[in-house]
Length: 211
Image (tube, rainbow, N blue to C red; front, side, top):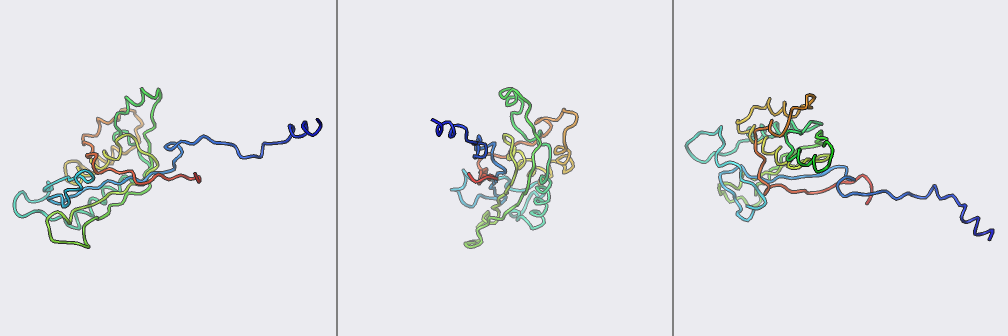
C-alpha cells in the first residue's frame, strides 16, 4: 500500500503536454501559385482548367498590326507592381464576403496580412520551342504569405493585372493596401474583379513544429 501511494504522488509536471493542432490555424505560412498566359493564344488547350488566359492584346499595345509580343520591359513593370504586395498591409479591399464571414464567426476578422515573397516565374516552353504564337507567354506568380482571406489571392492577381494594363493607377493600388484607420474601406473600394479561379493552386503549407 505504501508503494502505491508513492506512485500516486509522483510529479508529472515535466512530461510533455498535448497541444491542440489545427491544419489551417497552426500553419506558419502558405505557398500559393497562380498560372496564366499573356500570349495571344493559350498554347496548350489541356491547361484551360489550370491556367488563365488574361488578354489577347494588351490595352497599351497598338490596336492593329501583328500579334503583340510581350517585351522584357512589360514583364519588368508587372514584377514591379507585384512587388507592392510584399510586406504587411491591410487587405480589406482584397477579401471576399468579409461581412458574411464575420456574421458567421460572430467576430471581426483581422484583415492585416503579411506577404513574405512574391515572384513572377516564366514558364515558357523553352526546351520545346516550336515558334507557335502563345507558347512564349506562360507565367506563374508565387506568393509566400502568412495567411490569406477568402478570394484574397485572386483579387491581388486581378488588381495587379488591371494596373499593369493601365486600367487602374498604381497609386490607387498603394492606397488600397494602406492600413484602414477610419474603418470605411471595404471590398467595394477596389473596382477590380478577382482573377478567374482556374489558375490558382495551393502548393504547400508550412509549419514551425514537426507534425
